[in-house]
Each structure stands twice: as structure tokens, then as C-alpha cells.
Amino acid sequence: MSTATLTGHATPRTHRLAVAAWFFLQGLIFASWASRIPTIQQRMGFSDATLGLVLLSLPAGQLPSLPLSGWLIHKYGSRRTGIAGAVVYSLALVGLGWAQAPWQLIPCMVVFGFASNLMNISINTQAVGVEELYERPIMASFHGMWSLAGFAGAALGTGMIAAGVMPEYHFLLVAVLILMGAVLTYASLLPHSPADSTAEQPFFVLPDRTLLGLGAIAFCALICEGAMFDWSGVYFKKVVQADKGWVGAGYTAFMSTMALGRFGADWLTSRLGAKWVIQLSGLLTAAGLLTAVLLPALPTALLGFMLVGFGTSSVVPLVFSAAGKSTVMPAGMALAAVSTIGFLGFLVGPPVIGLVAGATSLRLSFSLIALMGLCVAAVASKARV
Image (spheres, one colour):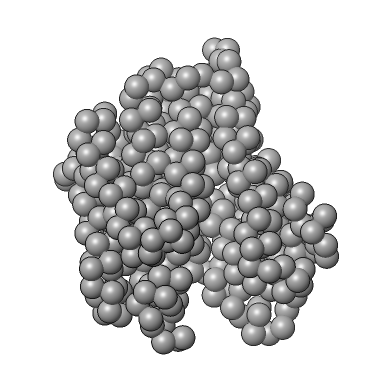
């Protein structure tokens, strides 16, 4: 497929800006939902245990969408699949805001999870295509836009809570903004991505050894990432014993360096190569977690969490970039295969931490997560990246 066919009449920079905007829109939707979970918990009268069970509805929708997303992208193209995902994702967010009872909330969460992966795989496939046009690493910067959207969504949510705006109106406003942004930038997305092909493909294809290796790296990295998302506040409260105002500082430190690392990872990758960057990332993740475990004072724990943010920042973008260059299956299906394996790590990591912490201690469970960072470095040394 020629470059002209791939890009239409837009320049590579136009495509890059459009794809970056979609990463931001996707991150803004998720962050908006996450910022109002406590409000919705209070509205529904959920205990912490009940909320944990209800939140499982999200991965219940995400898991089946992973193989289906790859097939839809291959059949209809990432641009059309992406806009469908964006519409459903936005409408599901509105449904979450208006839900007044668990029987309304849970189905909306399943749809929300399904649409999140539909949009996610589509836009990552677009990013693979744009990176191909640039002929140099740019994937991590796209994921950096998702991280920036996390800050923006959290700030907007805080403002809405302070102003007394209910979730239904907050989410409706966000959905309108998302749909406007998606419509305005839709024409600037790649009309044809590397996933588009006229050849027939089965609904499910077993990944080859290379993709399994990339999936294993993503699995280990996302265990670490999921641990930081779900347990950083608990760790700072129970182990670091931080004052109330500092309990969230670990999560903020982690997210800040993750965003910063993503914007610098492309430059580093172009000089060292993806394999070296992933190995370094795994070692940084392990070093950061062990620092927080061995020296659980506030300053050293913050430093440790900052190192984890740098360490986890580039692994998934680089793995996705490598998967998108697969020669055995279309990019969308390859991304879906690697995402499926990686997502299992994101799903099982936090519960495993809880089980280990309950049987031993939270510090020991974080030590075991540090081993996953070492596994990232070890697997990357053998995998094709």
C-alpha cells in the first residue's frame, strides 16, 4: 500500500495530531469516570467490598472485546471501528452518570469496558500506522497524551465535586466534548491503517512466539502498573504511614513520572533501541519498588514511586509498537492478541497483592511485584522487540 493511499491528502503531522487528540479523548473519558467513583459509591450505598465486586463488571466487558476488536479493525478499518468505539464509550459514560440503581449501573459498566477496548485497540492501530509514516519511534508520546488526560480528567472531576455538580451532568458534558472532538478530528485519522487488508482472516488467530514474548512483557509490566493504580494509596497509608494529606502523593508521583517518561521515551528509543529501553524500564521498576519496600519513609517512598513511574512509562507503548509490525497477522489483530495477554496481568495483579498482603504483609507483596519488573528485563533480553 502506497503512502498516498495510506494517508489520503493529509500530511503525516496532521495524522499525528489527530491520533494524539484521540488518545487524549480516550484518557479523558476514563479519568472522568474514575474521578466520580466515590460519589457513585455513596449514591448506591455500596460498601468497599461490594464496590470491588461491582467494579469487576468493567473487565467483564473488556475481556470479550479484545479478540473482537482485532477482527472488527481488520474487517472495517481502525478509523471506522474507532469512531464506533468513541460513540459507544461516550454514551456508556452518560449511562454510568444517570444510573440510580445497581441493575442500571452494572450493564452500563460492561458496555463501558467493552467500548473502552474497542476505542483503545483502534487508536493504537492508528498510532502504528502514523509511526510507520515517520519511520522513527513516536508511540510513547501518544500514550503520554493519555496520561495527560488523566490529570485533566482528575482536575475536572475535582472541580465538579467542589461545585456540587452531579455525575450525570458532569458525564454528559464530557461526552459532548468527546463526541465533538472525535467528529472534528475523524477526517484527519488515517483512512487506511496497517491493519486494513483485503485478505480474509479468521475471527481468532493464535499468536506466534514473537507475539507471545511481547505479551509476556506486557503481562509483567501491567501487573506492576495495576498495582500502582490500585494499591499506591493503601501503601502510603498503611506502610509509609503518611499524614492524611500525603496519602495520595505516591500515586501522584507515579503518574507524573509516567507521563514525563512517555514523552521522553521516543527520543531514548531512537538512540538505544526498544530492547535496551524496555530492559532499563524493568530494572527501574524493580529498583523503585524495592526502594519503597526497604526504605518506607515518605521521601524515599516517593522517590521509589517516581522510579516506578519512569520504569512503567515506556514498556506498553514499545510493546504495542513492536506488535503492530507483526508479519504473521494484521496489526489490529496482533495488538489485540498482545493486549489480551497483557490485560490479564492488569486484572490479576491487584487481587494477588491483596491475597499476599492478607497472608503476610503489604511490603512483601510489593517485593513480589518488584520481581515482575525484573521479569520484564529478563524476557525483553530474549524477545524480538
